[in-house]
Length: 364
Image: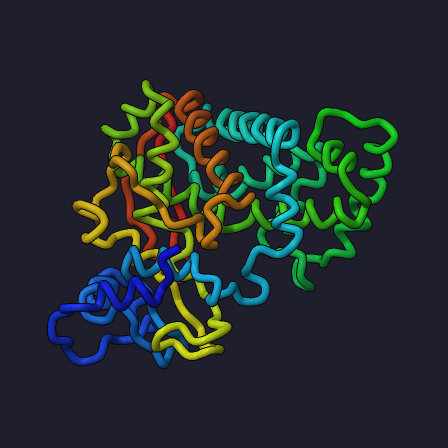
């Protein structure tokens, strides 16, 4: 496997003379793209002191960094054991239950917008579809949707209620599923593990249905609404939706920065240092993509690096892809006049997490 050191040695050869040092990531929150271009051209590996991390910005370098075993996820950001278990669990009947729940939840939310003149897709669709999917997939009581939504958005730390509260919430539901199993995802999980294991798996699923998935969906819909001709092609050729989703992740990933920690020296990077993999810069690398700033739903091989986490096959990436594909199809079916409404557009105020805060549309 090509490691980060090999890539950097190869790709830094012949770099043009460098201008004065680049500004910090902390100074370009609203528009980081000019800095990304400077970094890719002149500073493929540079230490950003105010940000406290080594910056890696070129596509091949970021891809190598995410795969390098010497660069590990920071505590709380990486593939915890529950996440790995969930990745393995979401197959066969479990995957079928999850997919059916995404489709059902998307159509319910889309139909609620059908009788309206205008709607905000972020607040009324994107923010709720991952939660609705989890509630439907697990067969949880509908009246608990608000509580589940809180867990999805704030996590299971102290501010989100904690794992113990989730265990108390699930215990009677798991007992009923063990006594009378059904076709929902919670029944499938209960058949495969103890109450403690199932609680961990559900917690991981709630994390997968969190803010990152909602942001990615919002960016995806915004890209298509900004290109109505491409949106109309997808209306008649739904088989192209998966590629359109991959292109959105390339151009506008929900997380622009993924952090890693060096457990041993990696070239100039010392052990213990933080490495910032700039997905937002790598996805627009002109050495990898033609006309990289343009959104093209039909671009061949957009090759997104990952769904924000550096783990392109994770349960989070799976759930995000399902919500994007089925969410778009449901909106197109329920809202034949779907188009972006006129008006001012919000400017992202977070460098790490970027997506529209408001997405106002006409529905008919």
